[in-house]
Image (cartoon, rainbow, N blue to C red; front, side):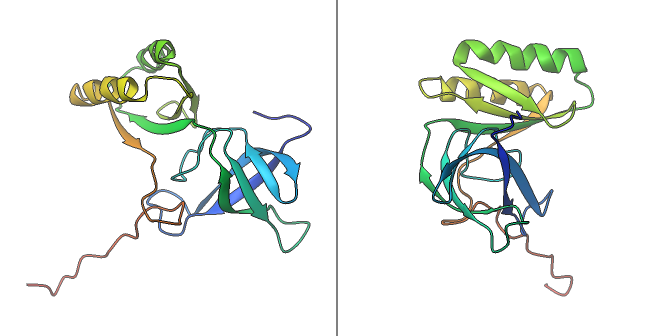
Length: 164
């Protein structure tokens, strides 16, 4: 989602399994406050339309998200479809979630962020995703905080080859 009034804000994710960070479109509200205008693909505990505080030490740098100031009531889930699920079947499945007040954005043709609007059936969406997961069509995750006070994933611990 892009508009001439939107800017990018970013979040560093040094412990995330897939990326070191993410940027999102946001509407500047003034006083270092921004309303997120897209569903996060990697960050945890951030959702569409949340109002966040973000700052930059340099006007030429993208502001970094510091904290959530106001929750929007939206909730985020993410799915990665298996190669055996056709692209058209992926879209049909995701579009069927609209009756539960869920919409989606695609990062590519296999990885999608799902937004459940306030008043939507979050548990119903989770139940449907779990059913599709048991069929082998996809893997999904919820996007609540993994670490208190952080938007990052839990740090991955390397396997100790000398452990015995």
